Length: 79
Image 1: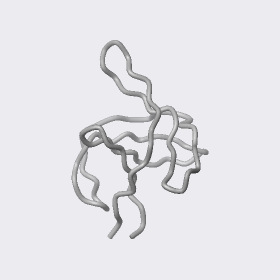
Image 2 (image 1 turned 135 degrees about the vertical axis):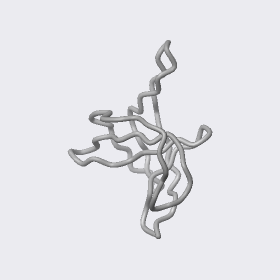
Image 3 (image 1 turned 30 degrees about the vertical axis):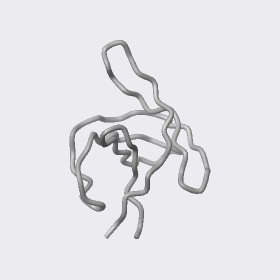
Image 4 (image 1 turned 180 degrees about the horizontal axis):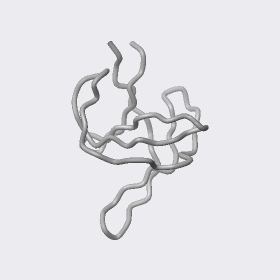
């Protein structure tokens, strides 16, 4: 089972209320630029449990999920 790894996110907020993540800072302090936002939907975090807005993003050429739940951001990490 995976765990929730909470991360810092710098995001842009549009006038319409859309949130676009721009950078992600991992637990160890490494920062990554989001290359592209691919999808946004309400979805479960199947590996780490819970539910939130799931942002499918491309970082460094790899697709990954970034979740936002009540103002906190997390990724699914190995336990």
